[in-house]
Amino acid sequence: MQKERTDRPRKRFSQNFLHDKNIINKIVGAIKPLEDNHVIEIGPGQGALTFALLQKLSQIEVIEIDRDLVKMLRESAERKKILVHQTDALKFNFASSYRHKKMRIVGNLPYHISTPLIFHLIKFGEYFDDLHLMVQKEVADRIVSKPNSKIYGRLSVSIQARCTAEKLFDVKPNAFYPKPKVVSSVIKISPKAPLDKTTDAQLNQILILAFNQRRKKISNSLKESFTVDEIKKLGIDPKSRPENLTVDEFLRLSQAGVNQ
Ligand code: SAM
Image (cartoon, rainbow, N blue to C red):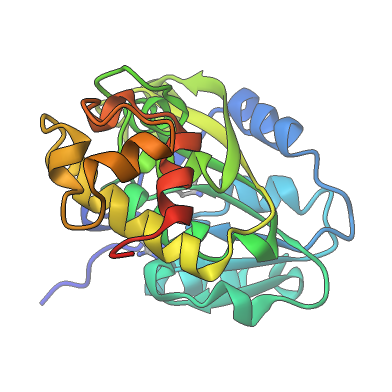
């Protein structure tokens, strides 16, 4: 059997490599890396961002699933400055890389797993200074969206309850090879002080209950956990639907507790 060529982008790993130098410089300019920053890049691919970042950084840690790309990075001229983890970023324990200094995450994320990957990353928020991520524009818009919008949902509240999130700029498909079908966006996420463990777990549960049935009133979807009066006491209209609730209101529900 013929071996798959290492330079052919693999669809199953969402390989859309950046090749537009202006965009690469714009991303590095937004990150503003400082020499001693502890940066972890997710999905370095052929190193478009990695090598540009290494012009400013003394070293970088990367997580790449594709064995052939890992080999290429390990054989590159910059190999001594690159610590490569050949693994699935969805399973990576980011806390294991922590060395007394908050880390910075960067990545042009594999689009087929961008949402679960972001849910995975925010679990480690306390270890991160910031995250600069390229995702599909549609995902970026959901992340920063405000209440009373169709795209405001579990992803928006999960992130905004724990982090500040801003969309920096859009990137057109022709900045990549091969061209993706959709426009991309670079976002910056900065974790806030972590929620306490119970609130954190309760928030996750409430968001699943509420947004799994987005057309139902919250008094209905949360009826196992809260009476109508308990919802009212928190200053929340029990007739609201999940998309009407602010992040702060979801946090109030989480602090009040599930199954109290
Ligand atoms: N950073 C490179 C660039 O901008 O040109 C590549 C970006 S490409 C969109 C996504 C990269 O993530 C690919 O190199 C792919 O092999 C890698 N990847 C895909 N799934 C992954 C996973 N589960 N864990 C780690 N890396 C993954």
